[in-house]
Image (cartoon, helix red, strand yellow):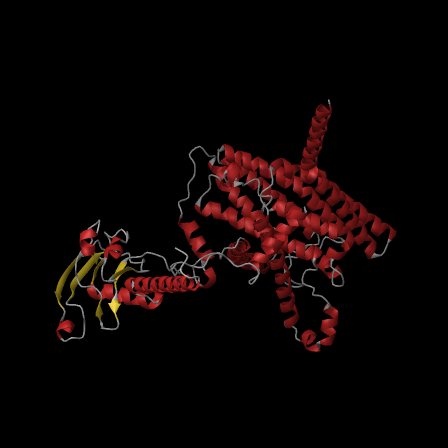
Length: 189
Length: 389
């Protein structure tokens, strides 16, 4: 009987805003945020320092794609001729058929130029069979949005920074060891 | 008695039509309120898609129900199958004839209003039994018989409490009963009566936790199992009208109807209030509706909290708890009236009854756990005795 009263208080509390909130999510109206580790559709990144895509059109991702959902072509980089860019080749044409993409992330693994990322984009259903063929400008748009929202840093830059820090730490510890060995008269082998 | 004139008849027809439309609007508001409030009770939002805050949901429901195919089973008894919803809904509407919304707002005030209401409440049971029988469906018949058992069992406590209230007010006229409560509502004088009337009223209109005769998981909808479309919606309409009627009766009999707290003081402080002839009746109706909707919210609250009872629990509760308690309420009211004691003695007596019965029910509810503990203690004793050997 006391438990019944407790139950009635609990249900009453859930009708009062501020005590217990409704847990309903108004999903299509109010988008649910995704985790930062979320893997959505692949997109191409944009090099802000030079003002061109990272992608050189080397086709490593295309050769490794298990579903053959991408195609690309390469051209000579006009900015390199002007001396503004270190990339000799640049992407000319790129297309991903997102209907075929299985979001495996192999393209991101194999890319040598930090050029492709798994973005947070996932609500891209269309009514046409070929409605999800995405070309280079839209891929770059999605990539720019992803870079902006996640404060993207190229993975090679991150890796280099990590390696530099490790090297510095190793060098410092060796130096310390050497100094300690000198103090004790070099008896420690 | 003077001969009935045409204007009387026309006035009555117009009044009935007005009552019909008012009750239809109230039922729409109740369905919306129930969905929304039940949603919040269960940490949901309720309807949100149809109009602002889902306000058009009742309209969408009504359109859906009317457009659905109305199926009549081939093996059903046609006449009974068609008559049953009509009987149920007419009795539900007729209950409202003598229920006043304020001193003036009543279709036809009857001196034996409460007697009339209880009489028509019983006719609704007939409709439910006929609906189950006419469907030629075993679940329908089971549900109809359950309805008969449940509603007739709970009719007795309701009538007994109505009799106690009638004894207190010395009248069965609802306006007189409300006029007696301008100082102190009967809820304070006879709390026992309020509790019995509210619980038995829930059972009478088949609301959770007493919705046993149309339990989906047991008798797949009971008497309504073969009904669809407009016919089913008529039962639905009747159920909501009955719920509203029970809430209105709780308000009229125990919560003081349209009289507000410190009514005479407020009227004397604000001469403008008593001066404006149209303002006081309007305030009465608004106050009455506020009270009725508050009772309705409690009904929904109980629905959102408790699971359904078993049929044997329901019948045991009716005959072992409610009926004796209602007789007790009659006896204490009679003693109070006969010896002309002050009102607080009646309050004390009814509270004492409530406490004693509440303790007995609590003991009964705890009995299985107690028995388990006894058996376990005996087993432990035997085990320790064996170890000692």
